[in-house]
Length: 107
Image (cartoon, rainbow, N blue to C red):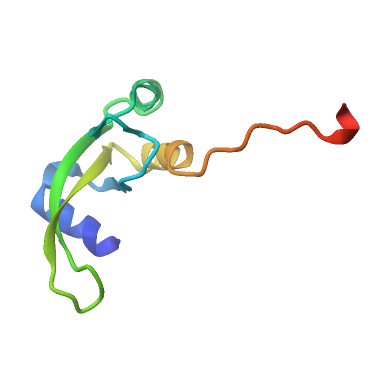
């Protein structure tokens, strides 16, 4: 992953030092248009990490070690500092907490 980040930063220096590649199944992405963020993520970013931005980038990635690299489009979040990146990663890349289930003793 570090090689991918370095490759992205070399291809697009405007991304800065604090970038995160979103997985294709990231819940921060809009299910109807994965090149965009969902409305909840956009609102969260506006409040918690102003200035963060989503970018579509192309990078060379080998499908396996020693494999022939191929161009791949990835969604990248760029942040102004490490605190913003950590806050976003904590809020949007972790598995969502399951709803509290009532225990039989509580009923």
